[in-house]
Length: 126
Image (cartoon, rainbow, N blue to C red; front, side, top):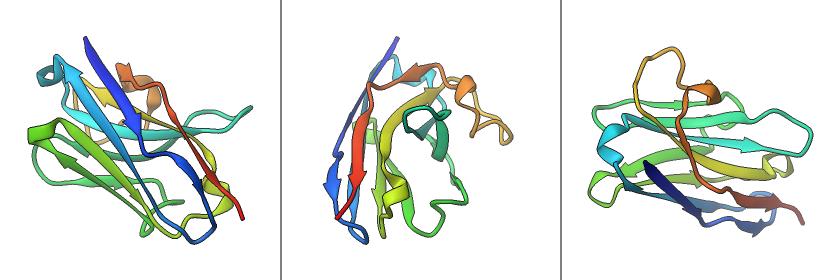
């Protein structure tokens, strides 16, 4: 099993920044990639960004490209999501997730992620 714990959410004004963290523990060696998703009530969970534990390559939804940055610290088994130029439409519960296998075609499919954190609320409002 793999446990994921998110932190760093909160209330921020439009144009502001937040950094989310996701600490992984347990059998992390069984995972190949990490992703961030977000969800608002009544809507489907939405892909935000993904990163592999090894090698290069980061992947983003078009709605956050050039504003959000996903990064990793392999030694700490931690993944980060730096969110800049935040907009009210970024308001959601943000979830961290882990995949056990990697393909370049399904990183945005939440059904392909085996482990999930509990979520952290991000609210962008003045």
